[in-house]
Image (cartoon, rainbow, N blue to C red; front, top):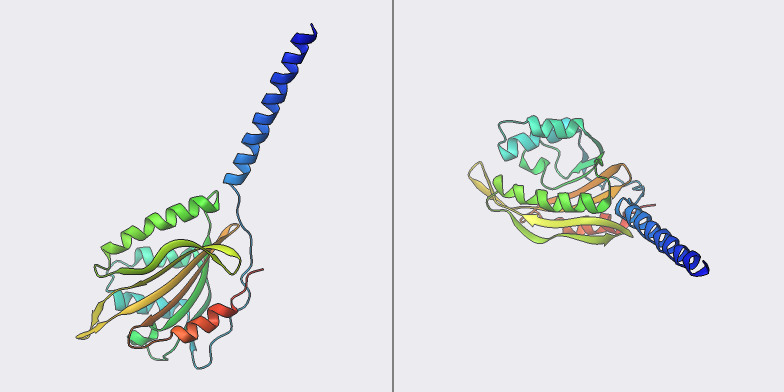
Length: 205
């Protein structure tokens, strides 16, 4: 009888440990970091852009005939900060630029988001044949939080001039939102030092 009870106790203990392991694994899978991006001040000499300016410029620069996807993106996201170095609405209104926005996080876990985001970047080749990743896309530690980082460039002809835009992007999932932080310039209009100063001052709490 004692041997039977001991065996049953052992089985129950093993089941309890199994349930604990499964519960811990499930919690780990759905874990989401939760941080808040602190204020990013407007760089001296840069212009504050509205979302309407951005939609107009993106449509003009990239020659997208069907802007439904672009407009839908703005319907589901909120622009926090958007700065351009030049005041006119030419190509230089969007390059160089700094844009920080948030959108809904539909993913159950941070890992799901990172997997989907990395896969999605493959589609960008459909729009820019000359697109080249200088860095990433890769998961990094960004100011103490987990982020997807990519640094890319491509070529674009506009008004008989070949431009070479560059873009640094940080995607930071935080609870039910995703921060999208973009730094854009052009090879002949280098703003990397200015971007570095802003990036150095970015804080999450």
